[in-house]
Length: 134
Picture 1 (spheres, rainbow, N blue to C red):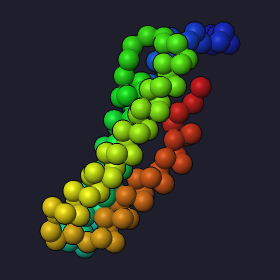
Picture 2: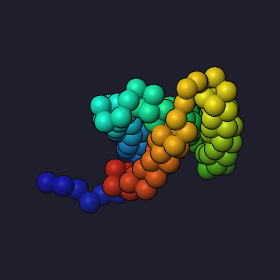
Picture 3: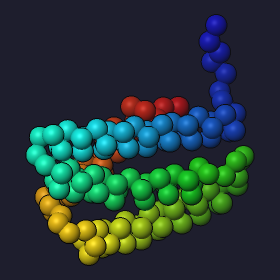
């Protein structure tokens, strides 16, 4: 028998945390599988360019998730809002640093494949409502 009783705040946070990390894991698996497909369809340089692009978006997203959902227990609303702002600021800084480092340090790099991976990782966030439910 399923209970229609509302979740407590601890249960709700735990459920959201589980859903967010599950979605990020799915994104990582999808990025590696797609890079493998690209490797067999094109070549190694295109594949690692695609993968680096996807990881340039996913690694900062993982940081944000740990920053927001990493703490255990119920926190005051003001502390949660601060963690969102700090997490998003850190995510933006990490993204810009990673993008810069990839373009400076990785040679050869196929820019089109890199930005395809980066763009697909960002667009995949639109799928999150299918995985993150109340």
